[in-house]
Amino acid sequence: MPTPVSTDSAKRALLERLIDDAGLFPPAELPMRAALRHHARHGESAYWWVGGRFVVPAARLDELAAARIPADGPIGLSVILDAGTMGAKGDTVRADLHRIDRITALDGVTVSSLEARLPQLTFDAAAIQRIVTDIAERFPSAEVAFWYESDYNAGWTTPLESWLTVLANARAAAPANIALGAKVRCGGAAAGKTPSVADLAEFVVAAHAHDVPWKATAGLHHPVRGAHGVAGGAVPHGFLNLFVAGAALHAGLLDATRVPEVIAEEDPHAFVVDPAHVSWRDVRIEPEQIAAARERCVSFGSCSFAEPVNDLRELGILS
Image 1: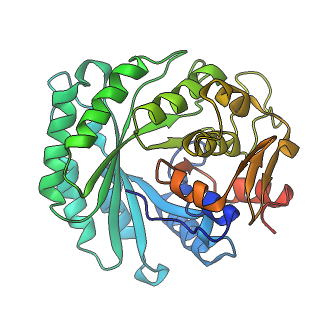
Image 2: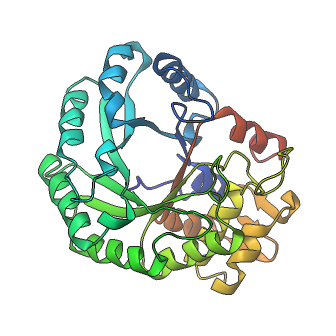
């Protein structure tokens, strides 16, 4: 479950803790110690408030423990559950949770987010319930979010209505300290792994309709959709496009039929992000509305912190 963001500034509400640090993952694939150093530097920069959790696979938690220097300061983790690649019998995630027990015994290390992608054949209400039960045993009172990612291959492998309904029902039945949400992958090196404008918009609208919070990952290196010098392949999506669309929809300022327009926007000047408001063309969102929306449109993972921040600086959104 997300920590509330500021309501004093629309810019702050939109960007606060927006970028989870996925430096261990492609295309950066930094070594563990280098990734931890980068993360510590982000926390010391003028833009520390834009940074979120450090994303790490459960299988590398022991490596993180060995490489971490306490002088780097406290670190909040989002752990990718390797058991999320479960076999056809739907094995539980207990092995990963045992690894988490060991890492959270270290001073300054917290885990408040878990992420997993289940094979299509093992995704059903019973599988999600088993995961929630295991998480509840490991986190009896501490607040933790679990993000489920469905597969995408030139289309949703499992219909959105199907898996979002399962998540919505599990979310309603989960203990109060466990939040369930969806994770959407917005890019990928292989053909067919980047959702189309229509499919990404469909996800945003469907998640809103089912009251399912979401986070994003992959492909969102730039604020605004565009080629950005990438030759061939799918046009990269923009994270401003995605989160402004989600915030405006949540605030009731944007009809669902217009969400694809925001996702498809390639003109940076169509967006305004300042302390007074955030807007896309004729749609203006106030700070309190954005803060409320960020409870549902939570964050995105990026292998680079500097690239999106520098782009925001070039657009004059960050000084």
